[in-house]
Image 1 (cartoon, rainbow, N blue to C red):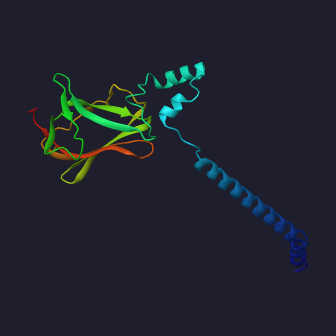
Image 2 (tube, rainbow, N blue to C red):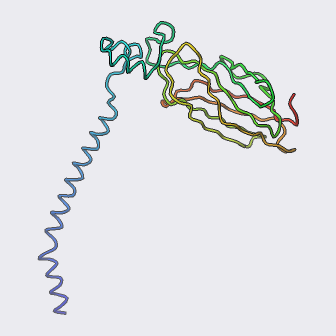
Image 3 (cartoon, helix red, strand yellow):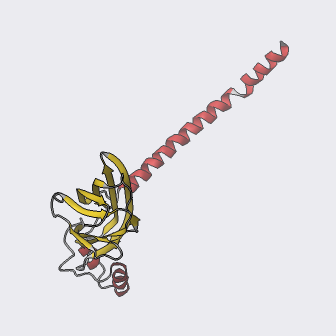
Length: 222
């Protein structure tokens, strides 16, 4: 019993006050750290003034080394035809091509508004093919352009593809981007009509194309 009482007494004499101090110091440190974190968040959110590409190109235009660096970074840009006074880039998709060895490219025009009417294209089962997109960029740089495609058959999702295309500066000539080679499924259950949704978005989640369409996989090409 005496031993138990001595241990309890030791705790009362040596343990309680330091714990309060430690707790208080930790609380003060935590508050300070939280305030610093909040400041960091505010600093990250405050991006400062933004400029159109035209303004960026005209800034420091008398500085020869800076001008050459911008030319190397952005390439040759037609200030009159493709660079605008707006911060927002404009990306227009002109066509989709389906390339399969031994066949002529299948060129599919992209509708300016809405979705393709009826069946958009037909693929042969078990064939190897590549998709190639042609698009034009105007006004400003588009950053982190991404392609997503989702395919359904009889209401069930059967395929989903995501591909980073890249970052592009405005130019008069259209860009082309070729996707990795794919192979269509084959067999009796693979044939039929599919529905699909294709989207192109940038790093800011701005959508430049969002279309729904249908296509067929058949035993042979049409």
